[in-house]
Length: 234
Image 1 (cartoon, rainbow, N blue to C red):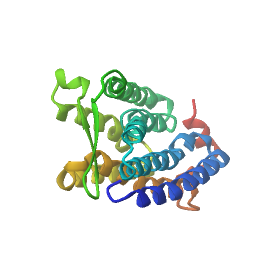
Image 2 (image 1 turned 180 degrees about the vertical axis):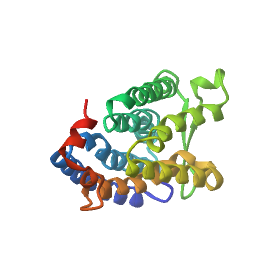
Image 3 (image 1 turned 180 degrees about the horizontal axis):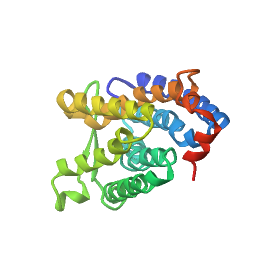
Image 4 (image 1 turned 90 degrees about the vertical axis):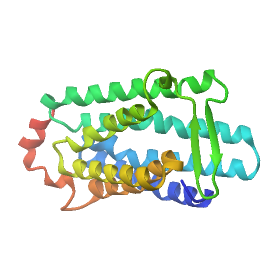
């Protein structure tokens, strides 16, 4: 994230065990929530990789920076636009599921087009240290077809739309938090938007831990009876 290796590692140290605990609770209470509960752990791993990028920069190890930047961008380009819609997909009733599956497929296509060329074209991904921030820039394959701003709009759409249109209130709230982070990032942190946006997502993922592990306020506790639970399943 924008600050230091220490902050990134501390974030990872909090999010990974918190995510593992949320996954255990989701597995025990309602396994449909398991993909959603995985998000904090995944965010924690991404923060760990950014801590390693900071460390590589301090040690003047360009190969280290490149390797972990690729790992970091795997989450940014492929994990979030696929896993977030999929996590919503498994929570929704059968009649609504196909739309969320389409979101996940679209996210995977966009992410793959942006990420895979990094391995074929040297220099397409550049990592720049800006004091207390990291900027991930470079060439995007879709730049030759559509403006980069449009690529980001579609990317954000496939992440946010499934959340804010979900039939589950707590998932909607998480989606609104994502919108807030996107807005703040756009207006104040455009110079390091990828890093700031992902760190904001890491902070927001603690809300997911609250959803999964909360007692009476948890979405899992609000399901009214076995009949409703079975009706939501395919």
